[in-house]
Length: 116
Image 1 (cartoon, helix red, strand yellow):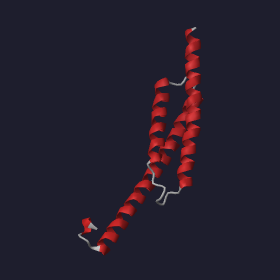
Image 2 (image 1 turned 135 degrees about the vertical axis):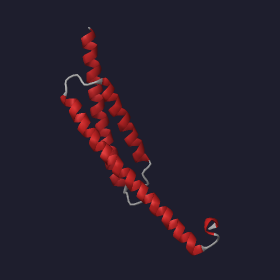
Image 3 (image 1 turned 180 degrees about the horizontal axis):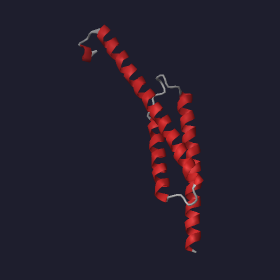
Image 4 (image 1 turned 30 degrees about the vertical axis):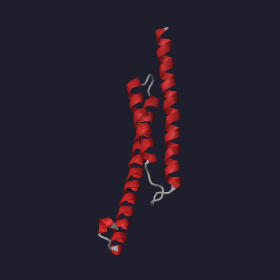
């Protein structure tokens, strides 16, 4: 009310505007996360197809996955984005994390065997 100089109608309009901006931001963050996960899935599939993947590239994908997962934590589920939509994307993150962990472990194992 103070921001709208005690104008009740103005305050209601202002609050609705803020709520709409928050909903749009959450929808945008979810869309960006979906795009990032799709790109990660493609890049991970490429790495899985290559024998002896680059450790640096694996670490970059791991960092990108962590960043994407954290961005999903900031999605406001009270907006247009439902809890289930966010949960689905977090499950994609978990599946990618498992695949990256396997790839990383295989890389470490291959390096260890090469040293012996």
